[in-house]
Image (cartoon, rainbow, N blue to C red; front, top):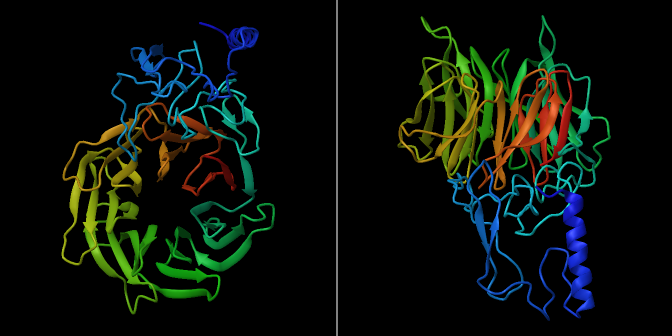
Length: 435
């Protein structure tokens, strides 16, 4: 296996040979300048593939400007939000790929060490956005510390928001906001004296939360400030989402002979006008909740749990899209797929949003105590909530997860924006890292 130094010597020698022969120079990405071809159109070379798969093939483009992405024969799960094989290096050459393990979207080779290159940290194209790269992981930034049990987390309109659950025995917490235009500023308290606030979401310019302690529902906007939307009697909120008409809650409720039963409820955005409307019930807790494409998705917290869908057309009933899940926790939905973590089996799973009783695709296994989850057009992100936990990413079209942050004390919820992943920690911090 050639070392990086040997690769650089070989490249330099090739450049000197071309210069002495009057050949065209090679640009930074291994393609010839327009006056000369880098390879013969249609020519094929061998390339490395991930996960111990057989070697693949790269073909020279029709204009001779360079080689296309490595085509691997391995069955890569590429349907999450985009198509295409993952392409990696076996050490004999540059890493090449549309999203080779985590970061970039440009099918170009990256030279240098994935352990220390801040523009290709841990994976080709994964930029640290100005921070350092060490051991293939970008340095994270601590946005807030000494928070009393941070729990709910949301990102939107250039700010990050979170709740603090408060300390035993009263569990009286607050809701905070921090403008990302000045992430070193002191967080702003936007709601105080909340009884165990846990569920939090930001949608269409408004922040919504639900309190586990007393079932109170709150709302905040930058123009109108804080308001009360109502109370869910005997409701203990775990998650909240919103669309253009309603705010929805996943909650645990008191029920005769069902001490841990659950429900999904909703209120109009301007207030509940009484108790929230129940749209679904379960004989076990409902914890995870997501919304996408005009449908709700939730998890039933049980050793024989399930993932459900409810189309929000006013005429549909809940349908199980995946059964037999081992203690499913949080849920995310994006691009026609539903993602969740199974705490009982240490897996990250996915299924089509319109499936019925389908067998999920396991995207990652052997994940210790997976907890939070999020998804976007780049990939799926999750946390492993141990004393030295991790924040993980699996880029769509790849099969090897990328570590975004390690050594995190019990990371919980994770949220994402265009450039960063954000999470809470068990020692009272809010952190972010380039995703």
